[in-house]
Each structure stands twice: as C-alpha cells, then as structure tokens.
Amino acid sequence: MNVKKSFPLTNGDSLVLIDMLGRAKAATWEDANRNVYRFDPSGRVIWRIASRSEADEKLPYTNIYFGELGELMAYCWDGDEYEINSDTGDIDIGRFLK
Image (spheres, rainbow, N blue to C red):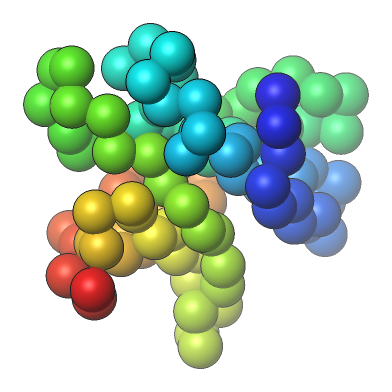
C-alpha cells in the first residue's frame, strides 16, 4: 500500500488514504474507489470508505482532511467533496468543488 496521508486519532485508531491515482487502471474497481481506511491500533481494518461510483467507474479519493467543525472530509478525483461518518465510513451527500 502506498500511503498518501495518515491521521492518528485520540483513541489510537488511524485514518489512512491510499494513493490510487497512479495505480487506478491496474486496481480493481473496489480498491480504486474505496481507498480510505480506518485502522485500529493493531492494524485491523475497522472500515473502508463507501463508494458512490458505478461498477467499473474508477474515481479514487485524492485527499482527506478535517473540516472547520472537525468533520472528516474526503475529496474525490472527479471534483466532489464528501463528509464521511468517521464511525462507519459512510459518505454523506457531496458537493462539487472543481
């Protein structure tokens, strides 16, 4: 895994964004589009981000960050930004930024 960004959380978990831009063509649809993870302190996957893409449409996330109110945000290659439920990895309705 080529980690692009990682955030430690106060409980010992971590949020990780895997860089898929250079590998998206070779990756499976699921690996390309679900490239944000939450790991527990032992490295076990708690969740992978939900995908909002159609099958065979590869649109990886390219950035994760915390918004002004502390909400977890993910920016997608296609210009959309989504709020992420940090407990489940579910995505909220996005908005187009680009």
